[in-house]
Length: 73
Image 1 (cartoon, one colour):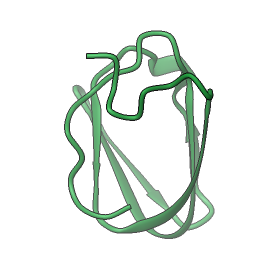
Image 2 (tube, helix red, strand yellow):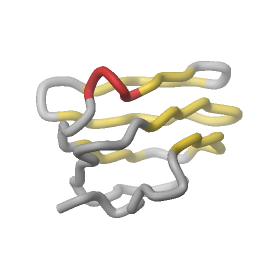
Image 3 (cartoon, one colour):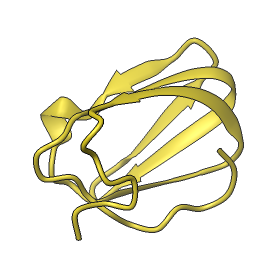
């Protein structure tokens, strides 16, 4: 991933991000999560909150097959 991604949210789906290489920032309404190589986060506890990402990173993402990558709204 590289560059900014539009603000979006997932009302009913979880996401897991694991950084393999680079620097991955996940912007949320109330804070920015800063992940580096070997860092990860599951967004289940933040479900439904708008988020976006920036910087350049090689990541592993795990999410349901039904998820819409651009968000529910």
